[in-house]
Image 1 (cartoon, helix red, strand yellow):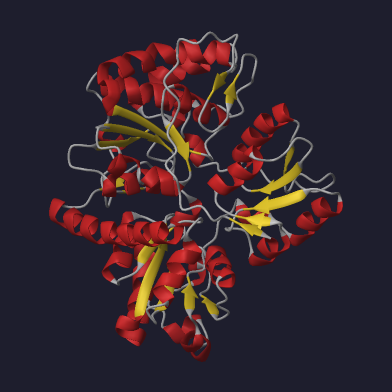
Image 2 (cartoon, rainbow, N blue to C red; image 1 turned 180 degrees about the horizontal axis):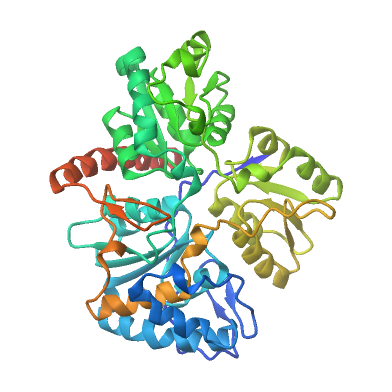
Length: 459
């Protein structure tokens, strides 16, 4: 079985080429090709899902006759080109691999960067010349960029309601009471490891306890490094990544807390888990998970492998699925597996639907077949992908850049460390400046530990 051994190399977008005619293909840094007649895979949002400032752009977009590049790109160019001319080299567009296909392609078309959460988190810190950073991804990703950004860099998200269901299962007000109980029992022997899919408030908790942040590509390195200090780990929020990271480095004693919706207010530890089991554990895992990745089953892996296909999955999948697969790793790992496959290869990929569709589309040009792991005849469909990520769409991208150019960008789209956005209402809670400074110090320390551990592992 193969694993993701990458430490997260910087992935920058191609040179901006909005002038290339649509009759030719445009190569991008991910290998994605933008071709005429290629339909847009992301569904349109209803008009009432847009804030007032973005509604005019949505109305124009929804009135377009189709969703092919020949139609969408000229419309988008009307807003993006003036913004790029206005900001010049100080503008940076970012997108995660899980974004709908058109956003990934459009961000690269305009010189942006598309990658996994580790690489995206480092963009502001490692590209100080970029002063205006616009991210099409979920809120925790943009917040992480803002934690590591300099004072003269501003970070914006195209849709602040783009959240993460896993992060929603581990809000700081849910986790902090349990973390306090664990700290009371284990004192300084407890260190928090916060997955990237957490708010800045929980990354700060990791920093205060001497722990670290991790991503799916480096979780095993981070867990090993913290365990080497002899400390017990409280891993938040994904129980499956915790199990898989522990399994990869040979740790067997993982205690998993109940799902967060089953944890009552004012609960004591004995109400949550058997205390002797807790005391023996090397890792105590929060009971969160990703709804996209928990649909995968061992029977699906077996079906594809018996049919002669290779299977590669994301480590947010259940541990038995990861063990049964041919390989497991981050989105950068999965993309590399597809990109480097020889013609004639057949790959079943267990991760988010938009990612697999983009990978399949590109691989088919090289004679490589790619299918979604859950796409088995006669079985229920697994859904289209990360629905919250898909709240970032062309009207939000066009509107964000145009409003920034005009100096009229809504403050709700500005992302500062410690911000908490209600994904349903769109309301935001913002920290006082002094509290935010403390959060940045602690969260940045946890992120820097992750960077140091990852780079040491790669050397």
